[in-house]
Length: 313
Image (tube, rainbow, N blue to C red; front, side, top):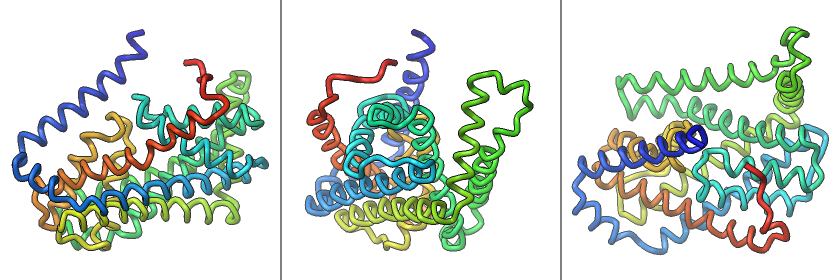
C-alpha cells in the first residue's frame, strides 16, 4: 500500500510546493486582476483547440498500430484516445490514460503485445517529435535566451531522446540466457516493433510529423490565451517557448504537470519580458483549457458500453 501511494503523495506535494512558491513570488492581486480580464471567447477557443489533440492522438496511434500490422476502427481509436485524455486528468498516475488505452485496445481485439507496444511507441513518437521540434527552434530560442546556460539543456534532452529510441531498437540483442524471462521476451518484441515503426519512412515520417503538429497546436492554444490576456506575445514566441515547457512537463514528477508547468512558463516567458504574474496567469489558463478540452472524454466514457468496467490495478 505504501509503495502504491507514496509516489502519488510525493507528486501532490511537489505540485503544491511549486504553486505555493510561485504564489509567494508573484503579485497575487495583479494576477487576479489580469485573470478576471481575460476574454472568455479566447478561453473557449483555446479549449476547442485542445479537442484537436484528440484527432492528432488518433492519427498517431493509428499509424503505430498499422506499423505493427494491425488497426482498430478509427472511431474506436478516437474514443479510446479521448477517454484516456479524461483519465489523465482524474488519475494521479502519469500513465493512467495510457494504461486504459492498452486495456481498451486489448478488449477491442488487439493482442496484448500489440496493445501495449502500440501505445508505448505512440508515446515515444510524441516525445521524440517534441524534442525534434525543440531542436528545430533552438536558434530562435537562443535569440531569446541569450547566453543563459539553459539553452544547452534542450539539445542534451534531444540527444537523449534519440539515443533512447535507438536503445529501444536493440533490446532484443540481450544475451540469449535472458530470453527465458518474460520481461526480456517482451522487450525483444518491443525492439522489433520499434524498428518497424521508426526505420520505415512510411510510418516514421507521418507519426513524427503529426507529433510536431500536436505540439504546435499546444503553442497555438497558449497564443490564443495570450491574446485573451492582451499580452505582447507573438505566435513565433509561443512556438519557440512552449515546446520546452511541454518537454519539462513530460517528466513525471507532478500531478498533471501542475506546478512544474507554471514554474517553467514563468521562467520561459520571463525571457521575453512577460511579468511573472502574467506568465503565471497564462499558465493557469493553459491548464484550465487542457482540463476543459479533456472533460468531454468523461462523457464519452459514460456513453461507453464498458463504463462499469475498469482494468484491475
